[in-house]
Image 1: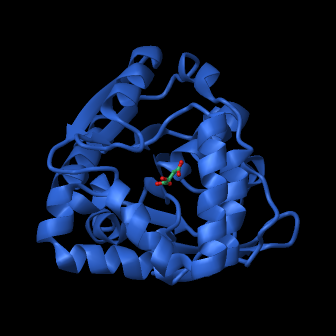
Image 2: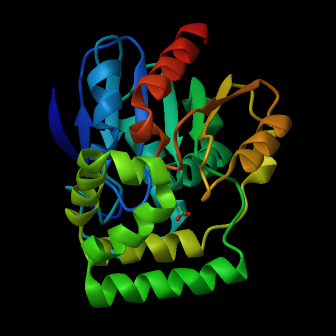
Length: 266
Ligand code: MLT
């Protein structure tokens, strides 16, 4: 069980966690502006029964400090990784930005994935208004650094209750964000701004699909999750109580329980 690397076709290094043992794989695809470490509460639980693989996207964690890439390239990295490592029975779990990347990878090569989990994510691209706000975020990161940006981001990404009553979790989330490079985070913002709609893939998915969303998520709200569910042929939706956008961290026990029960049902 360790951190490993692979080289992408365009010679960037992708770092990933691999628990190595298991007949089925859980592939955990992180959100912005985190690395695979955002999945620690899931890795600890899931590695008991599955091979858990969790990459760091370009620019984040231990991966190359690349800042010029598109969302398509992130999807290519994911596909390349599944193929190169010959991962068995891949249960892919994409959280928020990780969901954007997974949905694009599904458009390209759906047959690589055994089941799909879309957590606190959406198919829509950025609206013009969001794009303009992203520019503000980009400049804030450039001028003040990721740690300061984290404070504002987490105010939106977690519930008031989490903010008031869980200082250790809030500190940890801030620490995880602050560990990443500003340049890499800016690269991811630009990649997200340039992404296109992935809604068309939903009706074509043949895999069993789980949609998870924090009940108080204001970034990718419950209504968005409900609309995705309606379009996917074999989907179930579970709403994570007492959680905002960071549902895997704010209610890790519920999140893990739903994930494991879904994997057993596939
Ligand atoms: C994330 O959690 O990955 C981000 O909030 C996604 C986004 O900014 O669109």
